[in-house]
Image 1: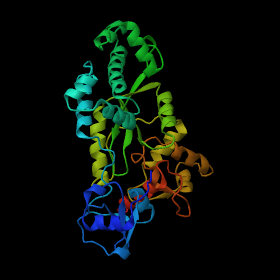
Image 2: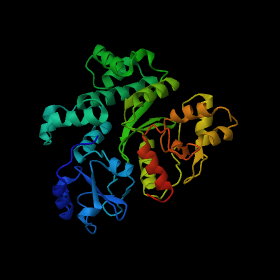
Image 3: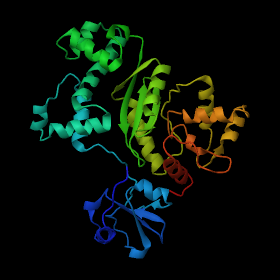
Image 4: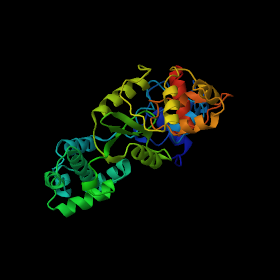
Amino acid sequence: MSHTLPDEDRMYRALLESDSSFEGVFFVGVRTTGIFCRPSCHARKPKRKNVRFYPSAKAALQDGFRPCQLCRPMEPAGTAPGWARKLIQTMHENPDERIRDADLRDQGLDPATVRRWFRKYHGMTFQGYQRAIRISRAFGTIRQGETVVRAAFDSGYDSLSGFSDSFRKLVGRPPSSSAERTLIHVSRLTTPLGPMFAGATDGGICLLEFTDRRMLETQFKRVSSKLNAVVVPGDSPYFEKLQRELDKYFDGNRRSFDVSLVLAGTSFQETVWRELMTIPYGSTRSYRGQAERIGRANAVRAVARANGDNRMSILIPCHRVIGSDGALTGYGGELWRKRYLLDLEAGRG
């Protein structure tokens, strides 16, 4: 979201002084080089007449500037602070341990700050996240044949009714009727284009979306319905591999992905998505060309809709499909990201 910028003379002075206190307040585009920088960049300072100020990296990208290779203004956004990473690791390693406000204060943390961070980046309070981790673990044991009563008490609940109420609120149904459902664990990953939500089943990644996508909630509902699954916060062995591959991709050192994928669409959608994965890195294809490749030349609009329903951004490269006139159209992650990805793959990033 954009914001009101400080006085331009003050911003230019901050740029000359490489003032890190203005990080996140503005970005500066340099007309003579076509790049944009952080305020703290230590590159040679441009003349005042050659700079333009922007409230966000997105705005600079939209105006045609490329990110500076020295100060790297597109470094992963939304990276969790150290205290949050430590808390999340503790919860996953010890799901039965309840971390209370007093425990947070003992660690030098303000409980209100912790709650706000989890609400902003995970859509629930810190205590809610802890409950979700415990319920997720219990869900897994029930699917493996454990009794509801044993799962409840093993998860640290003092009563079966309390466990059942918490389970129903998170999962949407009582624990006794959930043994046949799939579990989708969801976690946040970081990229230079902003944080993303990744979802994984036991078989692989089934969702990868930018956290600010407008239809994100709809996509969660669609994939969970298709897989007869419940979506809960949690960890997966696929997430670490996916993060490594994404990091290499954005560094320009990876052109394809090896992480296992679980497609969750109609037969037609999955045909379209598999064809998307045949578009070479650094290449583009029109919607009509995509329709012809699957033998459905008259189904251009249906192909476009299937592209839009892709729930694994970047991994299934729908950003490589453009209009027949070369226009960048139809990208759920917003067109500025599509432009960035195409420039990256073309060696212009």
